[in-house]
Length: 243
Image (cartoon, rainbow, N blue to C red; front, side, top):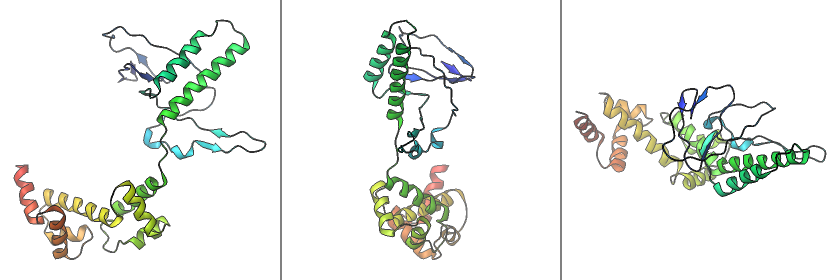
C-alpha cells in the first residue's frame, strides 16, 4: 500500500491507518494468499498527524474527572505498526463483523463500543510514558551536551538548572545510563575530542580548551586513562585508518 508516495508492506499481524485526503494506491500485488480486514470510520473532531518525537505521552489525560465533568483524554495511535495483542484485536474485529446487518440503534452502539476497544488497545500497545528517572536523565544529558565546553560545569550547575538535588540526579542517571553525570560529561568531552583529533590539525592544547579542559596535560592523562592511548597516538591511528 502506498500513501502519498510512501510505500508500506503490511505483513501478517500488522496494520495501517490511512489518513483521509492523501493519495492511496496499491504499488504492487501480494505474492501470497492474503486475507485482511478493511474498516472505514469517520472522525468528527479535530485530529493531527504527528511524528513520534512530537508526542508527549505524559499529556494523554487532558482533564481529570470531577464531580460534574467527565475526564478528557487524547488518543495517540501509530498509523502503521505491529499488533502486540493480535488475538484480542482479531477477536474484537470478528465480533464487529458478526453483528447483524440491521440498522437498529443498539447494533450501532455495539459497533462503536467494539471499535473504541480496538482503538484503546492500539494506543495501549504503543504507549510508553517515560519514568521519572528517564525524564531527569534526558534533561541532564541535554544540559551536559549543551555546556560540555565550559570548564566550570559541575554538579552544582546541573542541580540549579534542573532544580533537583545532585544525589537524585546521580541516582537517575546511574539507573538509566549506568554512569554518573560527571562520568557522562567526561565521556562526552572525549567523544568531541576524538572528533577534533580525527578531522582537524588543531593542537592538543586548543582541543583541550574547546572541550572544557584548560590543562592539556590533564586532558592527556584523562584521555589515556579512558581510551588506553594518548591523544597523539589516537590521531595517528585515526589518520592511518582513514587513508
